[in-house]
Amino acid sequence: MQLVEDRVLDVQNVKVYFQRRERLIGRKTVIHAVDDVTLNLSKGETLSLVGESGSGKSTLARTVMKLNVLTAGAILFHDEDIFKQNRKKSKEYRRRVQMIFQDPYESLNPQTTVFNAVIEPRIIHGLVRGSDEKEEAASRLLNLVGLDSSTKLYRYPHELSGGERQRVAIARALSLEPELLVADEPVSMLDVSIRLGVLNLLQSLKQDFKLTYLVITHDLGVARYVGTRIAVMYFGQIVEVAETDELINHPMHHYTNLLLSSIPGSENPQPLAVDADVDFSYSAADPPSGCRFRTRCPYAQEKCASTEPKLTELAQGHFVACHYPLNA
Image (cartoon, rainbow, N blue to C red; front, side, top):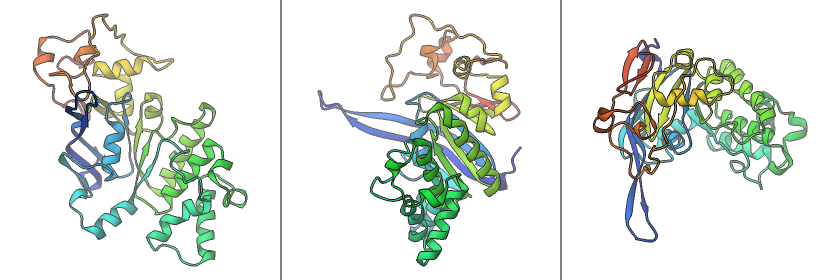
């Protein structure tokens, strides 16, 4: 068990709702993007947050980065509420917590050279001075991520491959010497042939710089490869959290089991036969009552519709929100 004093990030009962106006009828609807999520992240670990598109993973990640406004709850960084920081503290937080975005084609300014992209954060935070020092720092950052600074430093993003662009984005995130990196689908936009290289890079950087990671992914295979622990998110809520091997080998939530069964070569998935009468009409604006997965779960019973299951520790460090869990 990780000691509380090693805790880097605490996400406490976080809700993030958005209002959306329906164009045809002019009515406002409330999107429950993140709905009462509690998570923690300890120093030196990698927490993989996995779930299908629309589950709220990226919204939570952007909220951790203070790019969204909280509806309720709190996010603590070393026990300090990030949404109650003054301007100075907020700037320090943005230095210590950096994000790697999903799309390397959009996260880099096409009119800015690689040099400017990686050195600008250090200039803004006053960490570098003088042209020689800037070039030396930028070259070092590129070399750290496996790029040849002698040929790439003054190129533009359109002159790089997708994998090279993502490595530049990683170098930019490292430029402020952060403590926590939030990686939002860091390899999903890359060719399959180069994904492993980027994942291995992230792993080696974690060891070399004693980083802590929050990795957002829809791919349970990626989550398994990089994660110390895995948290499974569905319809804006966390449904299962456990250490990686425990969750992979002994899934307790039926949704986790469904994700596992989709991985080629899975060893022990328990088949989840979805009935033809499954109701997929619910949305984040109108989530199902009770257990949100019940509309897709053939094992659902009356209690699943009437009572929302709470995230409960059923084995050491293994939490699940299900009335009728597997392997319990």
